[in-house]
Length: 433
Length: 182
Image (cartoon, rainbow over all chains, first blue to last red):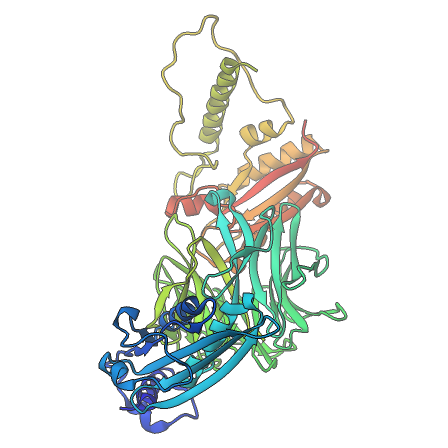
């Protein structure tokens, strides 16, 4: 079977389970209950040339392995090393160790001191070069180049966009439960380069990325009151979005990045508001005696999914972006909260509380096709990778500290995120430029 | 203050708190005790006879300690509810009376939730609880201008446990004196 055919089958499986519209129908008949997605064996030997060739290969290997779709082969088995990027690999040797895909690369330093990385992706069984690219950047950007190469490999072999050249903002937690210190942190999606954005002198919650810029919005909570902020990650410039009469919380950007939807509480009742960031003008979108919170736009900006207990328990509702036409979409048993619209528009992820457990799940925007992906004492707060195929969330054990986890939309590939510390409220960035 | 004096005050506070608990226990089940502390009898160990008999102490009237110990600064809510429970009413009545007696005191009502909910929903629920307490105090003659509200959601559990008792304790309205106490 050619590499392409293997991945066609693999993705047919994903297609079958996710029932994506508009893709090859002939493949939908595969029995997903029988099907274990067999990760693709891939070999990523260290890149040749100057500098961090071995580390770059490790970063790529780690990304592909964590996706759950690839099974990187241990370097000890490699039939050849120091592969010359200008010469065809000896495919017989790679076939013998059952590698189906092979990546090789070379690093050189340009006259201006910039790093140049060439890489090629090979189908071992056909000997075909599937892609080849050259990247040029400053030497300190070597990890990002490795992430971009990972994205190209993922995209070429799966047909889906990659999500490796991204970052995650989250809340690092320390101290006792009754008085947690919460700091905003940012890291690469693979856990590298963690760094603090706030000092922990006040409680921070629910950071969310702008879909269009390196900007986040988050909530801060102090004994004197709550506020929501814009924070530019590049410039470290922070500004508050104004003063509000009661609690203000649950901010999230519109898809164009020009507006922020959030909840404002007045006299005990929480409703959803929308602020234009350029003019700071605000409109009230809901006026219901129930709690209305956790707004999230559809990627076309036309609708907003939100959380309301107007029907007696917290459920998911979809309304037009002007606040009209709200209708309930969640009808399973249990409480549904924190809906987040997929960047592809095809799913809404949510937190569900049922049977004494918490779950991360997805459903169609009309409420159909609900799928529970995780189950534990406390799973909460999903955020989408920019390709709409992977979610990060946080999990807390009884009496324990929260940790970041990832799960794919089939629910099969569930694992701790590559960050060792305690973290909650993750927010996945869009792809970097 | 010497160590012995501190110890004596602490013991006196425990005695007072225990008396206060007994006085407030109008509803045996369900629900937690009225305070955030451990539910056991406290750390009082064996105690030899003192050289000069017991020392009678009590909080300064109108002080934060007076309010916390003799009135009670916490009331509790049922699961997913924000209506003031019948066992909370005597506590809030006493808070209102105390606040009428000390009109310079300003308070912040903090609404809290158990961990069995999402962060954002719990912020909204905590705000409902804080406002329910504020409305009750206002209905008992405390000027609304003396009261602010805040929701901590599930961020500030008074009991770090993960069980029904802890959750019941963590669903509360906490009346915090922010200024004007003696």
